[in-house]
Image (cartoon, rainbow, N blue to C red; front, top):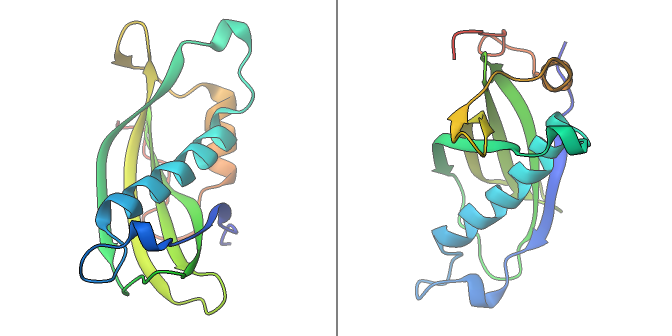
Length: 149
């Protein structure tokens, strides 16, 4: 069973985002993927109560694969899915594609850990957050829960 990816970002590649070669500069891919990750991680963390404040996320690995040139005016949609869970970590994949034509422009894979913002250290995923992440876990060989990290 495959889980439907969440739409986590919809936007446009503005001319000011493009470099001297006429395509979107990598710094703007990073910003779009980062904005999309806040949406996904918000779905996982849920609405935090006052006693849960002070928790966040810390990215420990991120890799982008650029697939298709993104030019000014391109309408972009990013869809995100969880692909692996650890004890304190979530690995997710984000696919940036053309909104109208479905052409994949870039794929980002990020591993982030649940983080105690005061102690500045990784903490275990809360049971409720783990449950929400498991509900977003995509089917496939890399998606089985892994409680090692």
